[in-house]
Image (cartoon, rainbow over all chains, first blue to last red):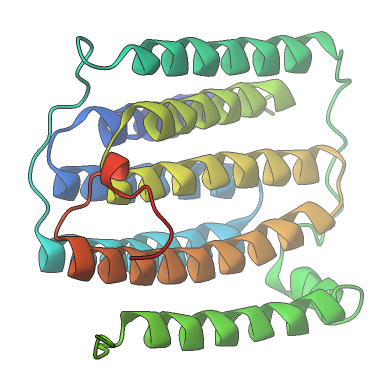
Length: 167
Length: 100
């Protein structure tokens, strides 16, 4: 049962991940990304991380991708052919490099000889345990991240604001 | 229980797909989305290791990475809007000077 769910979610993630980069229209790309996020959320819940699965859907599929979709609708970029091989020899090199990256990563993971997974302790993955660690051991990064968000909001507003050009 | 490296292989494939997207696409928005894809692949690996070693730390780092990714998208999209206002284009090859 677990394996079936794993294969299902993995297939959703990979399939829509590939659609992100092969569709012509940017809006389709953004929408496939939402589906890919949902697949990853499923994988998270299989990995005993229900809170992260919820957050994945809230933050990524809900907030970030809606933001991207709004920008796509606002700017209305033209459709473009995915790849123009005649003009663009660099694209071949890019694909070759990425496949090399894939092979290196896969071989190193498979060959490290990872032993059996440990059994999870009873509180593992519960929101209670997570927040206990988050507010004790990782309190400083947590506060810093709030600062990062504040700076990002201010920066985004300043950059996207209409400004008069000094001419 | 599904072995760790199934998840790691999914994560590798997702990362490679994102890398291909960054390298072959010319639209800035799609490049940004591909970067998100790569970040998600990293998150997946973190959570998988977190279950493997029975330590919650991986999940917390994934949580923080998610927050930073949201901030990054906000700033990136603001930059894209800014560029579009000046250039009326989103083609990556047209964005080749820092100031205009």
